[in-house]
Image 1 (cartoon, helix red, strand yellow):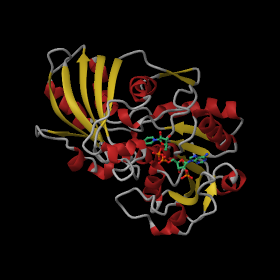
Image 2: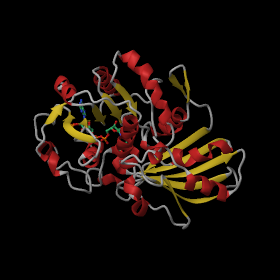
Image 3: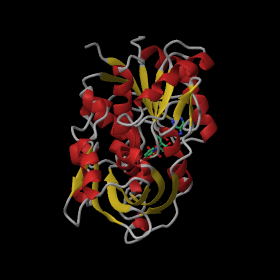
Image 4: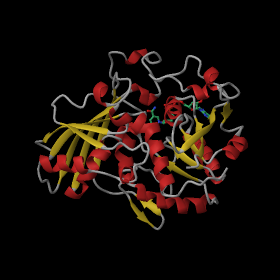
Length: 362
Ligand code: NAP
């Protein structure tokens, strides 16, 4: 298969570094461009990252000598080299939106980890096992941007990456209310314990904007397609509380769910065991074989033991039991920089390639 030429925008960041490890040997994507801000541009990738490599695995050697481009100043050059870009940048929202639209309008497929476009009605926000059909709004978006090949597709926030997949197979039981408390790793803020020593032996009960995203974004993912755009769902009602905890990687959530037509705990476990989506049916390269894993042990999932399950692309669930105020409660876990960020964006890109939305243009 002819590989798609890929760029990583924000390649020096926490998520960008993950992209390099996931794309280095990818069967469908060939990374040919690394880009970041003017602060890193003009250096080799290893120079730009001197003292800033933040992953527990080594930097893939093939990137060490590659030049880092300026995502803005080198725009024309980058566009001439890529079919698709993976974008994870720390910039003001309106600047991110402008940057992503500019690349898309120039014909490039943009796979975004940023929040700027998550509420744009003609930008699909895709969890590939749940709503790959939302990709059809790309046609509406292309008309708005005046392009035949470009588009922006976004990944949802990492906080909801464990509980939305766990709730999804229960939807036809009538999910009325959800309460989710998340316990989120410091890499979600782009940090390590070295760069954020205040987090050692500490919990911070506030993550800016996270509770709103955790309550609002699932409604778009469960939204319906109407006249070429996504109309957010109105149910279930979700309330969330998000805490930063002293964990390097892996977001845990404690979840309470009210169901209208509850059929027992075994029925819920069976729904999780049998749940498969487009990535499993199409055997996409980054798809976990079993997306939702249920642990019977009372002390699982555990962050350190279970976050890497199926290459960090699966969701671990445990402690399902009945609740005195909601119908059931359980705990779930997903790796925030793998399934919750770079890995989720790569799986979304594979989904959009498999569905014919990504064009070999260079
Ligand atoms: P980060 O580690 O702070 O990295 C930020 C990246 O943005 C760097 O590569 C930086 O380049 C680049 N950048 C900053 N200003 C730029 C500009 N003007 N033009 C081009 N590039 C610029 O951030 P991160 O944790 O990787 O997060 C990046 C994005 O992903 C954010 O939108 C975040 O919300 C989202 N996200 C993160 C996670 C996670 O788990 N960390 C999960 C989901 C989504 P320089 O090195 O040159 O400054």
